[in-house]
Length: 468
Ligand SMILES: NC(=O)c1ccc[n+]([C@@H]2O[C@H](COP(=O)([O-])OP(=O)(O)OC[C@H]3O[C@@H](n4cnc5c(N)ncnc54)[C@H](O)[C@@H]3O)[C@@H](O)[C@H]2O)c1
Image 1 (tube, rainbow, N blue to C red):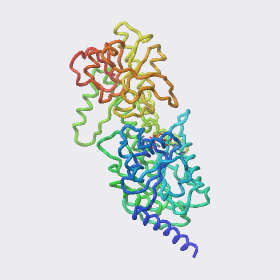
Image 2 (image 1 turned 180 degrees about the horizontal axis):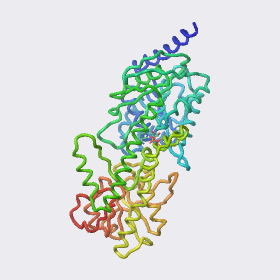
Image 3 (image 1 turned 120 degrees about the vertical axis):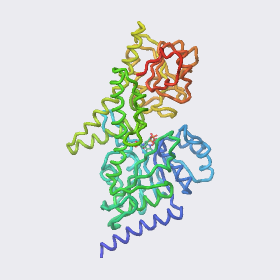
């Protein structure tokens, strides 16, 4: 008797949620309006849902309500239009979470000072939701994290509300869920990793298939119903742990392959072989090879960080993750390689690093974006300063270097005019922004250290270029 009652109650929670989604009366709340949360919120707004964005940072909320953007590739016109049509609202007040039908969590998951997972943002967010959680709501964690976070960290915090969401296994073929609706499901809980690639013009958010898993069948079904209204394709997996692992696999795959080409670059430099020419040639194989490119080190919120979430969790299972550790070691040694190449190039010119004037071009961790997180450029500047060089930088997206967790370099961008370029002993191309005029940089600079093969098409004065 009790069993049937429990199942019927769960069915009702799911059916009510699904009917609101189908009628597009479901209210969607997105917590964390950064590189991931803001585009996600705007995507649901574009698809006809009323969306509320929640962020701790009042300055972001104020800008959004004025129809302004703090992320370069996100259009102000789009934000302003959704705000005007009352499809999108932003607030710092978490009490409005109670009005939401779905709550999507997009907060940061960095590493702490000991390079261990810092889940404080996820924990704080769950603590912030719990007092406002009500029966029938769906909560989805989107932040990248180690397998087990949704069930082991988020669920117990949300259940402090007195509401329950039982963990029940289900089976899926990627599209359909087989499994009973289960017991004790007052609210729904899922994990759906964000696969956004900021600045990627080829793939818009809605074109990237959405991986979905619930802690039970109802949660998986509810999330699929919601997300299939905004994304072109969804793919279900059988547990939140599998979904969490999927995202980490994707980023570990990139991290390890980048480390491999970085290692091969060092060997190719010694052997007098052009690694970029080799990659272009290998790329002509129509199967079995995906091109990755060497560089001055890893940057961004994901690739340098996410694999270490897994490494940390693997310790609990006494299972070493040697590939990941090794890849991290190789990638994080790349800024030192840039410094050594630069010192060597100066030495060849009977100059030394001490007091050398160096201009670093590009602070963003990859080209044409305004995100400096974990950028190797910052590490390179720090190493140069520690060696006594006098360093300036230029980046079209940062007039001043922002204060960050690890760095407070207090520098202002210097325009790379012909006169300015000529003043420096060395110009380092750290980020290959498309706006740079590479022939002009090589023409006016005395010496160019190119960490990105950005000068590949420059014909004149190639004797000034050191690729490293
Ligand atoms: N940036 C990317 O390219 C990318 C891609 C895929 C996945 N991810 C993952 O997505 C997650 C978010 O990354 P991001 O790049 O959008 O981060 P971000 O730093 O750009 O944005 C996070 C936002 O969350 C806000 N915030 C933090 N704690 C909060 C709280 N308790 N309540 C309300 N707001 C809070 C911050 O003020 C900030 O605006 C991370 O787990 C990241 O690994 C990022």
